[in-house]
Image (cartoon, rainbow, N blue to C red; front, side, top):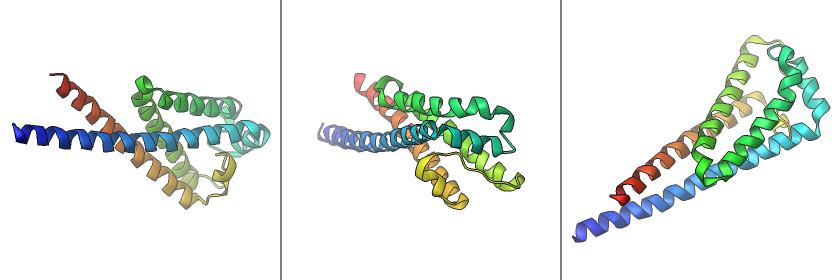
Length: 159
């Protein structure tokens, strides 16, 4: 009986730590996406010009200049709501992965390298930008795994 109680205590402590880590990662993503979206919308003309200069997305720049910040805001809202946070985590992972693939394509296949990330993120060099994105991708994977594990714990406790 004592071993079972100790196991439950350890399990509960691990769950609390996991929730803290997930909340920190979600908060970082919320700040990142809201900051980037706001910067892009405030500097709309600059963002549009930078997107128009990109050889990979020129044809879609007029749509993307609105779509990207809108999606970033929607993902941030998903992360803020407990019931949709896992969906938001998957969306964060997907969005950051897409941004990272775009950076890799620009670096390898484009003579010009415009950045339309918004705000202070524009001041990052491309290597730093790539590292930054990869760190955020890893963090989203950690948050997803911990969140799924939390669902498993809750299911076990219900039994």
